[in-house]
Length: 369
Image (cartoon, rainbow, N blue to C red; front, side):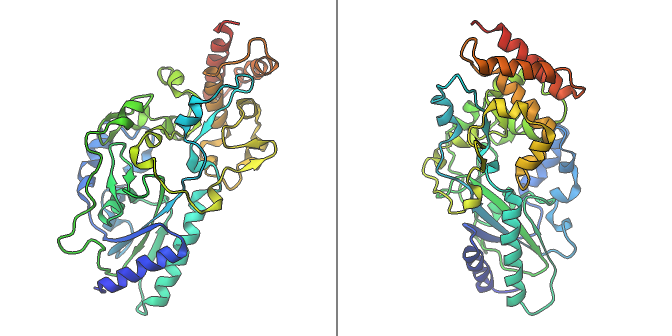
């Protein structure tokens, strides 16, 4: 086993590369993973079958001869308002807008993380002369990064199930480097993970529009707006459509209301600023633009974006629902144009788009003029 000095060297190199936090932990079955199968058996994973990969329940299976996990965190909080603040000041009925989760505003975070993780791997090979195996995962592998991060000393798991750091909050991308090096954990000896500081607070649970946080520390993904707008294929259950509000990709509400995010620092990574192509921006995008978007425009605008995961069908489906929840200036040209688009979309063979467009159209036409 290498010394604690070597692990400290890794942490320092990670910070030089641009990570905000870094820690080292042994590749072992963490206590929280003991309940993971029960969570899956309850159906809380929804259609995310990749979560059933047995390697997720035992990090020692994630790579041949893996001994250690280096966990890195990158702050992605920008200076723009939170969704709860932006929703409260939406007054322009003439141009209904949607909300995209702030993690997806800029360039694909997987690529940004990978570049930094690969740079860290290269530094490891300069430092350690003996042959060793390593593999980097930028939120792409069979690893429960947030749990590994807890035991690497980066924070605690909050009631919204996300990693929370007392200074940085929860706006954190997590990536890992698995390695066969037997590194000394950053929490060595009798040291324990950071204390859970959530206390009696339940703001995240109370704020969730779909009640996806069914109890503290337990998420039913099938009710989560992030799952509904990104992972779920086909039609969104009608019981959740109105409660989705203006969300068209992901949801930040449980993080927006978290007290530890009130003082969260601003990232210095320009890649996470909202991308734009005049006159459109991913910060409060025009719903008219989104529902009218065709597949070629989707591929062009979202090249190099994490939003590719929802696919064109998913994004248009979500935009239709947001339109159904929007308010319009009575008799406006915008409303008339959107009604025309919805009329066309409800005839498409894709069930997700057609049912959402029909639902939205009925909502718009039912509202008083």
